[in-house]
Length: 290
Ligand code: NDP
Image 1 (cartoon, rainbow, N blue to C red):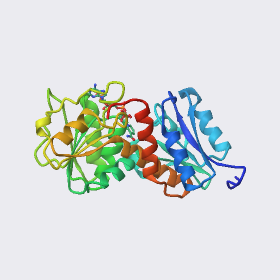
Image 2 (tube, helix red, strand yellow):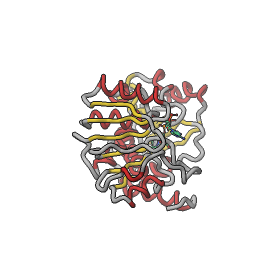
Image 3 (tube, rainbow, N blue to C red):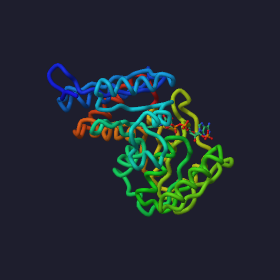
Image 4 (tube, rainbow, N blue to C red):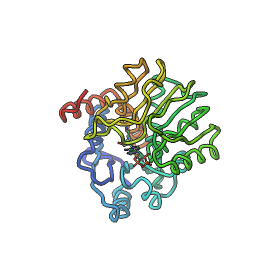
């Protein structure tokens, strides 16, 4: 494979469907421009039955790597040559990296969340509540446990999924984990330091949707994180601010997972502020409440 040169760009991109509203391309290409790299990020709408050919195409064209978004995060694994440790534990891949001719699956969702979280808190020794047990929750719960969180409680609508994720954490990490149900208004237990909404509640267009959470149980000083990037000021983030908690919006996670992906593909550290500004401008133009 040739090195990138004047007329030959380093190629990266994303495979998902639907892909039309995915803003990652704007953020990543802004980062490449700022770094002065001759690199491109191509947003591709790839159906499940075309995924195998898309991966083969990326391999044939010498792509440095690509993101996989819904619905390919699990399905892509069978077309790869290996998995990084946390991706294997999580059982899903959102970032593929070409290393010495082998396509290796990484999961940067949870790592992106952790980079964002570490800007405000150290999860080590903390009691954490994670709402959700889907792909994002799985990635975040595994990374929190690997980072030394003492207790992780998984609260999910479908209890069986919460039980399964809690069992994974208990079996494969040093964290203590438990499953809990929502009830009519979940009360965050005393002593909790971090809560994370990793469900899709609050995502545009259903921007005023709320978790079944007793807001009075949010204590000042708790970190309240939301994975929802659009809009970033969800009802949960607004409640957190009102209650004197430290809010952490979903844009930080989205930017940081891309920073990590870019580093895997190019070896360069991208400017997170430039990337965040691109996303915020796009969301302002979309007229989301802030
Ligand atoms: P999944 O479909 O895998 O999981 C969805 C989760 O949300 C499940 O736990 C589901 O519960 C729960 N849920 C959905 N609707 C409701 C509801 N009405 N009431 C209670 N629970 C509900 O999706 P992902 O985990 O992949 O994504 C979740 C969110 O995370 C998305 O909105 C996505 O945009 C965001 N995300 C953000 C990223 C970022 O970088 N900021 C990165 C990745 C994802 P149940 O199991 O009971 O169905």
